[in-house]
Structures are given as C-alpha cells and as structure tokens.
Image (cartoon, rainbow, N blue to C red; front, side, top):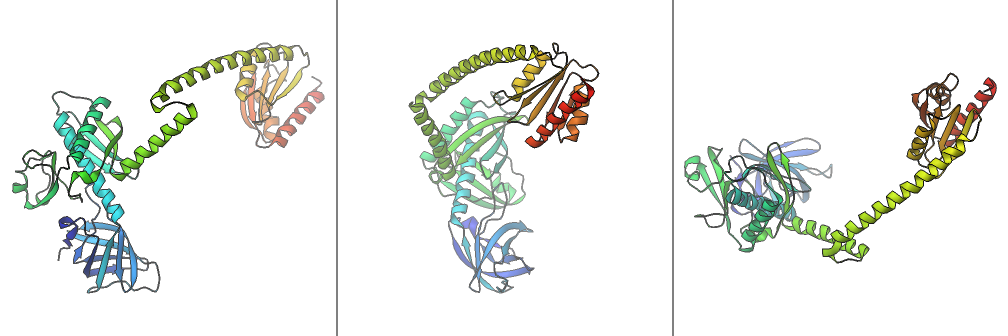
Length: 415
C-alpha cells in the first residue's frame, strides 16, 4: 500500500492521526511507514519536515523523512529506553513543526517566483537550486537567451522588484497532480518535463499567463503574498552560469534587519546619516592612508637612525632587543644592515619571541649554521642563509638561553 500524502492536498494541516503499516526498529531509531502522512520527505531541493510522532503517551522526534518506492519512511528516535516502538497496526498521531514547514513553504515558493521572473525577463533557465541553512542559491543559465549572456546586478535588481510585485499582488498558488506526462505537458511550463508519471505542477498566478509554472514536489502556500519578501544578496559566475544568493519570507526580513542594524550602528559610530555612510567611510579610509604614510615615514627615519647607531659599534657580536619594533621592522632593518656589517648582529623582537641574525656571511659568522646548531639546541625553530636567518622561540626563557649560549660561543672562540 502506497502512503497517502496528505501534505499534497493540504500543506497547512499540522496534526493528523494515522495507522502504522510497517515498522523497522533497532535500539536507537525506527523507520515507520504510515497509511497517511503530513510529513514531507526530502526532495526537489527541499528539506524534509520536522516534528513528532506520538504513540503510547510518548513523543518520538522525527529526525528524517525520505521516500523509497513511493512509500514515505519516517525515521524516529527514542528518547527513553523504556518506551515502546509503534508496531504494525498501531494508531499514532503526527505533529508538524509548523515554523520549519512554513519556512520551507516561503523559501520554496520564493525560489519559484524569482525563477519565473528570470525566465520571463531574460529567458534565464533555472538549472538547479538549493535551500541551504544560510541562504537559497539558484543557478541561472542564459545560454538560450537572445539578448543576455551575463546576469548583471542591475538585472538582478530588476528581477527582485518584479518578483516582489508578484508577492504584492497576491498571486494565487495552486498545485495540480497528473498520473501521466501528456496532460501535464499541455500547461505553460517554463521547463520541459523530465518525469513520465506521478507529476505535480505548481502554478503561480493566472494559468493563462502564469508568473511561474513548473513541475515541483514541494509544499507551497496558497498565495504568493504569504512569501512576504524576496531579497537577493549577491550574484557570481558559476560553471558558465550565474549563481544567485537570496532569501525569502521571514528569513529575508531577518537578514535585512541584521544588515540594517549594521548600517545603523555604523551611522552612530561615524556620526552620519545612513545615506552618508559611504562618503564618511571613504573620508576615514583616506585619513587612515595619510596617517599610515606618515607613520611609515617616521618609522623609516627611526629605523635608519637605529641602523647607524648599531654600525657605530665595532664589536663582532652586537645584540639589540626591541619592544616597539615589529618583526617586519626588524626584517627591514636586517636587509639594510646585511651589506654593511662586519660581524654578527642579533635583532630580537621580544613580544613575538623572534630573533633575526645578520652577518657578513664569513666563516664564524654563518647565520644559517648558528640557527641550526645553537638555535635548535635552545628550542628555536627556523633557518636561513649564511648572511641572514630567523628563529622563533615558544618560550622567552629559551630565547634567553640562546642569547646566553651565543655570547658564550663568541667568548670561547675569541671573536
């Protein structure tokens, strides 16, 4: 016996009593087939319904619903080890998670409306869509269009306005069911039929000139007005097509609220009206670039002064430790020191526990060799070349140990 899909006739039905046709159980879950069901199984880009199956005063969460051989299989979980699984012939009650169901209805219908608009305006063909956790995606193919080859943001905005106009006029939504392909093919479909039997066609608007008409197995509201809102977030190229990121229904509203709240918060921080945020940001960025250039100028002056100070020291081993210079500053310094030094110069960035070695590269001053031997012995990681090397230490104590060992090495060698 094939499960009677009540959700096709009445997607607004939230509870229903039914009988168990079969039940396949283990310790943790059971797969239950019912005579009638209001649970939509995963399919057509839409996730399955959530909710509960109630039996023997226990509520079993429905964790998955799928269709196999025209039977709808409900996968339920057991929260108490002592509870009995429903068996063949058991009477059960179903409860739909309405918030999840209506969310799917809004989003799926929104996808239909926008796809229909894309087809009517630009001859764009929906080659696939996905209702994800964070957004809906639609892949639009314009290869059959005589006028358009690339979906631009201006085209997306035009389609968005047209799609919301379908919502504002409250276009009716209805589903027709056909056992065979021939009568279904007579409808003004935007896509050729791929199925041969058990076909459901969703039509939005007047059937003589619909806003959309396509085969679909999902659940939809009675009116486009229940979708509420369609909002496109972005578009991008994808495999020769244009991928649209969007939301519909309550999710679109909440997404807009989140984005608007961000703009409102920025306007407060910048002491600007929302319409002036871009100009204010541009001014801030320009000011920051000026400050950055000034900072770099004075930083270079400071670095060059420090280099001259170091070179005034004639010792063969020079160790300098810094708290205010970054590792990049010391790298810049080391590059300028490298062609001018006569011994070994050690530059230490204390906050980042990093040591830079600079030398003339001669025997006894081989930076790579020092890093490999003394550096490794003291827990340093890194390497380099004869004239320069870099070491990183996890602990400051290891860095101090390296510094002490280096001084001792030079004293012993008499350099």
